[in-house]
Image (tube, rainbow, N blue to C red; front, side, top):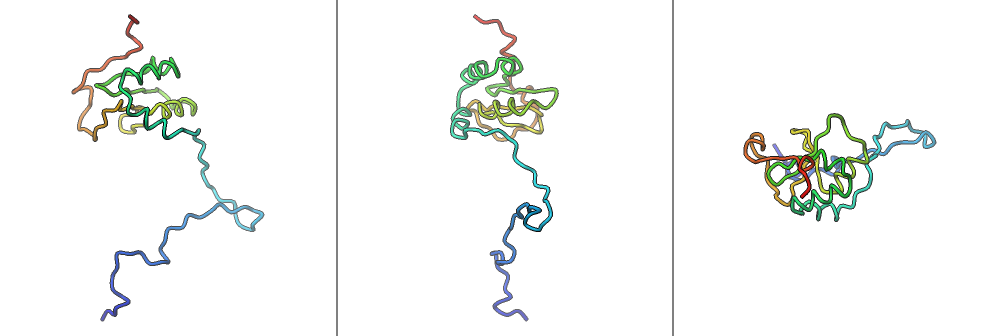
Length: 141
């Protein structure tokens, strides 16, 4: 038989609140914890959000200004810009891409910029649906 205090509730009991353990220092008498430090470089999140809404041509111009090598790796797929590397790029390159507004797509193994054309995940390869080109391969006018 259940009493009023045993009824199920959607609220979590006070004892089950999520507690994130802090790394203990040897001086405090505890063991040294293996806490992974965040080594990412700082990013201006407001500027990043503005950059994510820029059109493709402006993102390409910004990419060329910030790092011409990244511009040469860029592929435009539809309205989006993709940058792929053979190996993991240095932290400074990843920070530059993130600051410009790119995000990492683990499934496609590419840094992608939506260029203001935000879409939900689609089925299949976008190369089959949209035209693509490498702006670094095109001759300047």
